[in-house]
Length: 318
Image 1 (cartoon, rainbow, N blue to C red):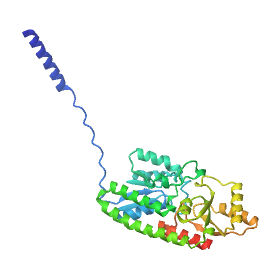
Image 2: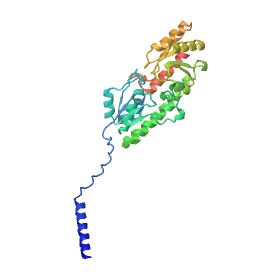
Image 3: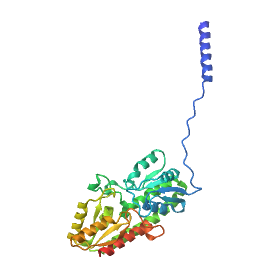
Image 4: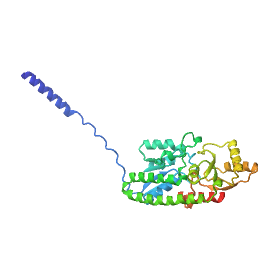
């Protein structure tokens, strides 16, 4: 018994010594903490001017906004540059339209989000049952939601939520700015409805270069025809031109419209085809569709762009 006791004590001593010599387990790294942005402006990068305008109205003086796509730029066909990628990497947060409006950039946004960069599609809060799903768009949703002001209000709420999450010390400011901007959008929505009502219902036919105005037509009572599909990546054929010209003649359409972000030649070809068929139709105006106007002009803001468009449409069709 004494021998067994001594042997057990010896083994215990050896095990204790071995445990004392084992290296300590590495400490679990602490989760990265969000940067405190209260001492500087929030660096925001957006794609389109419409998205940038929402962020500026909600963020106010707390944000520094860079929009990659300026006047006349088609987001459907836009290719990101090396400087764009640098801007994304240096941004505190990225806002984009979503619903594949920025077709060639979608994969990049997914990659940025997986890497931990706050990357937010401003349309994510819109209920799916309110989104258009054109047959020709292969089961995808129409991304041009800003043409229905009531839908675009969802983008304001999304930006408010995400900025407050990133910069919680300015939460009250973002909320106050959002409420003020939403009130302006309510007034804009009422203005567009009132202006549209001045056009006889039979004359409310809007013909444009591509099918960007579907939400506009649904919200404000216009029949909309686009030469190209929902995306400008879809090319119009000679048959498409002839079919649209025939429609113009049958309906005795007074005016058709070019877009600032789409080459005018497409609609001019429709006008020529209609005239060849014996129908006189004018170019009503250049509308702002996927891009806003020049910075510093009324059309360089979302509200100014929308007011310009409805005024131009009504004046041409009346």
